Amino acid sequence: MTAVLTGPVKKLGLKCDWTVFDQIVLDPDLIASVPRDQWFYTGMDTYIHSVEAITGTKKNTFAEAYSEKSLELCREVFLQLDRTDPKCDEKLMVASYMGGLSLTYSEVGVCHALSYGLGKVLDIHHCIANCIAFDKLEDVYGEYVQEFKGMVKHLNVNIPQGLAKDWSEETISAMAEVAYNLPHMWDHAFGPEWEKVLDKERIKGWYRRM
Image 1 (cartoon, rainbow, N blue to C red):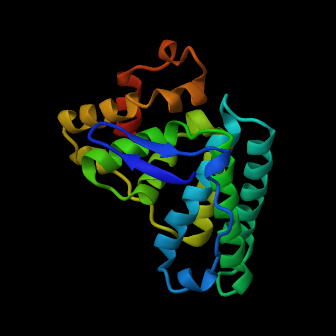
Image 2: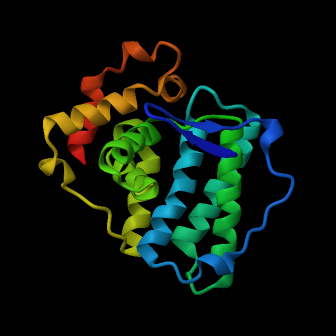
């Protein structure tokens, strides 16, 4: 993923083999002082990228390779290493890079579609929006959501709960509209006939769990 283009209706990524950077700088010192919860939310964007890339219909072997390595590093970072270990943030940065590369050869899915709705309508920052959504998607991502919950518990991170009780039906409908209008994500998640298994009511149901 090279850039994100945001318009009045859609938010789309710019990506292809020809837009991958020739050189990048990964400096773990830049995130050393980030508070734990924010560090976790941002790191989970990497984990969720990799889960969505590897579980959908648009993946290829490159996507699988980058995703699998990114997930392996995420498990080290969030379940094994102590954050005081300098290698922790080093590995997280490499995981983030590989998770991003996985999307050059694949696509995001259900979680990111729901996250876009949360961001567009409620202005919830992207990474925490991903965590709020992913936490409620065990029916889609199964063991990965269970693993995510294990990471949350292990690190004692706060994932906001019970938000939907304060949302009006108008707000939920607006978020569902944003999410539904991302057909490339639904195609990746459920295949070219995704409209047979997904409608706005199902999307609203996911939002109501949050």
